[in-house]
Image (cartoon, rainbow, N blue to C red; front, top):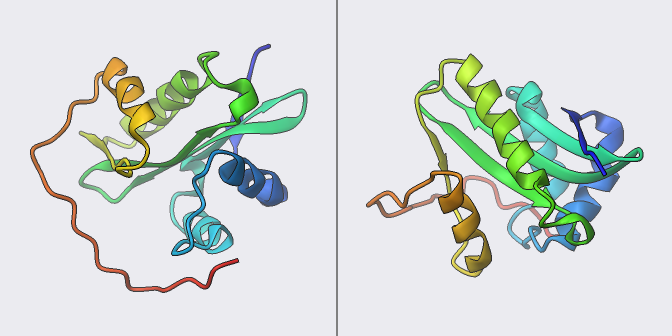
Length: 143
């Protein structure tokens, strides 16, 4: 089946959160409702969903702050994986970021999510010789 990519709308919230849960992307330190609300305040056109027969089965939350692009919450429902949908989402995210003049896309992969490394390598991503640091400014309450 073909996937239809389109911008996220607020009526997608429950389906997107269910998708992220099904894909194991929701962690206690990130409230997905708050993550979505924050994304909708900054470049909402970079939040893409994929649907099949009207059901949301994929998502990609891209970002750009003027220096580099970022990919977050790339997800394809387990029932629809390995059909090229993630590749289509990444191609669309890349197109949107490129149209904004973005020179580089970065992403972070949790150490526990090793199965996706080969996917990103196949798309041309290489591991940068950097260490990732973070400072949490908001402590979202768990759901």
